[in-house]
Amino acid sequence: MSKTKICIDYPLSTKSHSIVWNLIGHAHGLSKWLADYVEEKNGIFTFKWGETWTQQDVRTSEVIRAEENHYIRLKWDVNEDDEDYWEMRIEKSDFTGKLSLIITDHVDDDDVDYMKEVWNGNLERLHAISGL
Image (cartoon, rainbow, N blue to C red; front, side, top):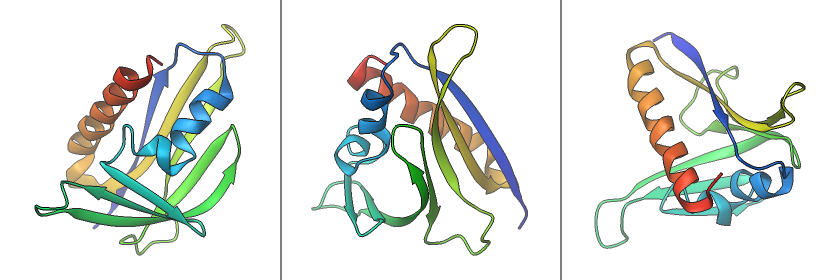
């Protein structure tokens, strides 16, 4: 199945790269908004959704590249194509000086609208827990 690259630009209400980085570049930050539980060991993040006493969805993602306070690029364990990655990037507007979180993901053509909704829901949770 072919993939589509999606990008979501989420404006932030902070000028601090380190605050955003703590929420996207570390397991404890990601577990506040992206999954119920996140663990990182040797560049491999394990994401869990659901409670331990019920059915859990567990996926792992390997860090391909990261630059502290700027971006993290990962690859899901189920992606066969080396070009398929997901990324969270902090960018500063040259005009306003404000930060944005740029989400890039590669999704199946049939899942584009669904995955945009998933990311938008995740970003709403990010805002709710952090005020960003």
